[in-house]
Image (cartoon, rainbow, N blue to C red; front, side):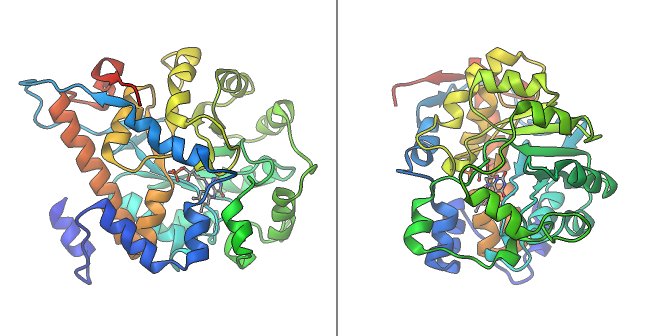
Length: 365
Ligand SMILES: Cc1cc2nc3c(=O)[nH]c(=O)nc-3n(C[C@H](O)[C@H](O)[C@H](O)COP(=O)(O)O)c2cc1C
């Protein structure tokens, strides 16, 4: 891995820590774009709670466990992963680096991770998939009227699964963007929203997301559309056992426990706090991913211990992207995975499956 990394940094740029990468991103981005990335909705209670929830748990050491070379390999919907970390779908990616999701997916491919390609990205599903066919295997979409047509297109492009974002019928009340009068170039969100060949235009989807009282689907309407998807689909944005059960009842194959990184409903529960009851409700077999607040390898470990099969990184990936493009995202994936591996050795977990609730302890936070 290290030998590969040397050639991965043609300019000799290396980052020692995730904090360094964050600092480089803060320097690289303009204040309004940085606020767009780092901000949440409302009073940002959920944004803070997402991070604080991880502080409420400890990992139990297992001395002399004999585990020296743990495996971080896992599987999700039949897809092999070298690390249980996926990169999130985030729109407007060329705001952060000209290569946007092309760079994110290439980095994921280099590290054997998966990348979820967003509908509102700067590049098309097809462009990202061509750039990194082994990583760009899941395409995200919003459940609006055009969803079946998008699913057709995604299937033809060779994707293996869809990720349907169910927590964003309208954009959250994003106070920092409002304070900044943030008004990004909509073309940077139009990789798929071209308005051509029956596809909705970016203005149409933005209009939907910006207005209240728009056409918002319910589960039954999603269920109808999903019969035409022809691909397994993942419901992203689940925070309660009731929503988890509804999503599965209408055909979801997997769930993402997520509050959209604190960008939608505020104050909503932290993702990590919501996870154990959702795992208990759906049983051991349903694949569950968690996002919102993953910043370190110990966060990954705790999410896996409390019931997730894998995690998704949003801002952590954006920081890597803004700091150094594909090598930056690659370094984020590497540092997270290396810390996870270290914790697995120290806690005696030889495989991802062995990271369970028995290895962690709740403390007052
Ligand atoms: C700048 C930005 C744009 C995002 N755009 C989308 C999007 O278009 N669709 C979506 O489902 N989620 C979107 N998300 C949410 C992420 O997919 C993910 O749920 C969230 O970032 C996870 O939280 P974290 O940033 O704390 O890791 C976006 C997040 C950020 C930070």
